[in-house]
Image 1 (tube, rainbow, N blue to C red):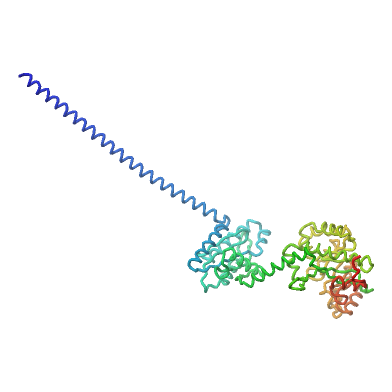
Image 2: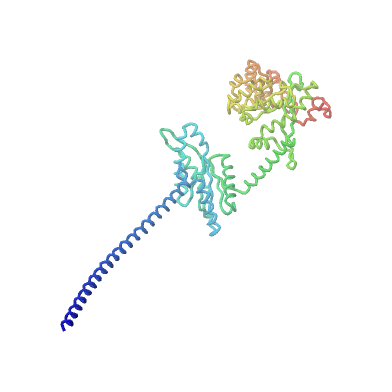
Length: 500
Ligand SMILES: [Mg+2]
């Protein structure tokens, strides 16, 4: 059966072929598996690497953001916290204090006369001073404090404060540190500082109140300079009262509540009243009669000196015009404040008022003090010359106190010299006082100046002054400042018919 043998051989060959094919397939499968495994490993490594890189980049971004934030909250010049950071720190301190009862103090600092460094040594020196002052502040206040530059020469510090902490003493040591001279390019940079302190929560219940109260204390320190003041509720009451008085004053100017009172200026030889000085008086609806010292400061603070002047002119000029027309008076004298000269339009304003009130310029004397000239002589001269050219007379008031610079008398269109009471009060009793006065009279004569002596209180004083050559006299001897009615009577006029 050859066929059977043949079939067996064929079968065996097939089996062998299949075996080798399987082995081949297995080998291939194994190779592919290994390849896949390697690939998987590679992929894993790649994924881990990628994850690492993403993490690193995220960290970098977070750092950059933090840095940018820090920069945005840092003062570029001094490296201290800026106002934004300070505000945030204040809010955080308040939250923390409300949570666990920790108190903290707010120090507000302002350099005294820092402008002098900038003006005299330049802004570069000013910047150096600010930088080194910042360093000193950081050292003195220590690590626990947030020290900030709020702008210009204003600084602030937030400091944790235990009940026993003597805050004013800390303030004083800060002032001592700031005051130490700083050598810079062979020069010495020096400035002092003033400090106001308020404490959370006992002084204030909110951040804005705390800042306001520290500011009030600082304002108090600024008055004497180089001191540290802890806020006291009485300060804010005084400020509130002053604020209310300021509003009443604005109202009074608007409603005609400011009244001119009149003080006679008399010719010493004939005893005739030649002029009158109008002085502002205010009777407050609830506080009663207030001294000019009480409200002139308010007018200055609020920039109302010109409004006050205009209100006075509007009340005084119509009255004075009647008295002048009746032949009982030659001129009206009225004070111009130094602050009115800052506007640069004071001459035009006065001229416009004269036109509005139809008052003869020749019958108006404006009294200015030396302060006007000290502030800005060139500017003051322009204004005074304009007024003089218009016919208004200029008087230099309070001469004899302050510098009494005789040079002004030559450089400026001044026609009248008003001698302060300090020069005239001892004229009857003191030889020296007479000698000084007679020298001034000689100067005034040489410059063709009219003279008015203020503060004349008795007749021997009046006699001496007239004898020495001072023609016009003003003082209690001839009349105190009085309301319009009384002054009309003083002039021998019927007060009821004072306005024609
Ligand atoms: Mg005066």
